[in-house]
Image (cartoon, rainbow, N blue to C red; front, side):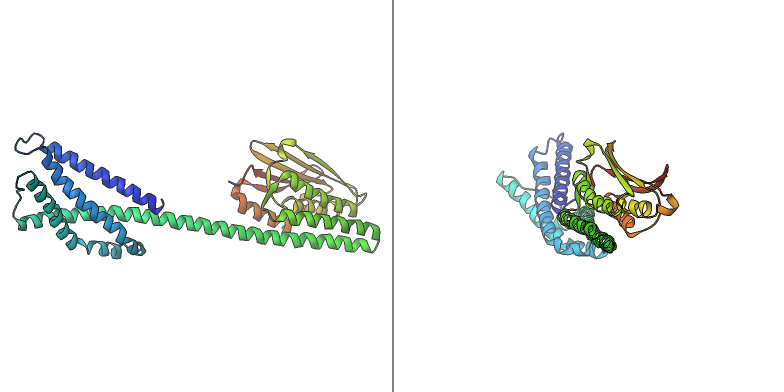
Length: 351
């Protein structure tokens, strides 16, 4: 509850309280033929006006005391220190208004001796003020808690964004170094192929830099980057790997974290193609079902024991998923037939 909303709720409760007090006073005196109908209105109305003035003054002045909300004894002490002034001001103003109204209609306002009035009003105002100071403390404390909560959520969001930026910064050099090592190895045996790879790497880096400015992208754009990477790896492992893509049309516009799939596909090449002596097939599937996006990257020629690791790529992917989606997303490696499948499940949106 924002401070403005807190004040509105407090004033609404204040208004309902005084409306109830006036209705009760009028109803109590309705059968008393010695009291005019307007007199209870004057008594409670004058009390309401003066008390409302003090409430408005308190809300204005007490803002400087809200820094003591964490120390209730100090906060209450500063408010109750006003009690003698409140009693004196209330009795003078409220009774003065009543005398003035009665004088306007040609009557005299009768009340107990002033000593008795001050004792009676002091006890009443002590109870009344204590009650409302407690209520005000509750509203002020809740508003402060809401502000601190919003500040904490904003801080957590900024921290998560910083962590995501750091993870992406780790992933991109990691990918770049691996690609350059691939090109370096080919330079010793096949310069034309290395040149083609270098050209495709430049295209991939250009596209990834453009996409990297965003935390999220569509699966369609993510797959375009993934295809550029796959072309580089197919060129390197020519004759040793075949790729197939099975992407459902309704999944193409699903939102995914930028550069999330490349480390997963890289893992399939590293643990499937590089370590296999026979040709390997890699299949990329994507479907949308029950408001969830399911992406599977399957490679033959590997076992889970060999493929299951904690490399920087997959570790960072899991950390990014946890920061963006919490526990609603998952990335699992499972044994699947003659190979290993990386199964990625994402909700439709991070919200």
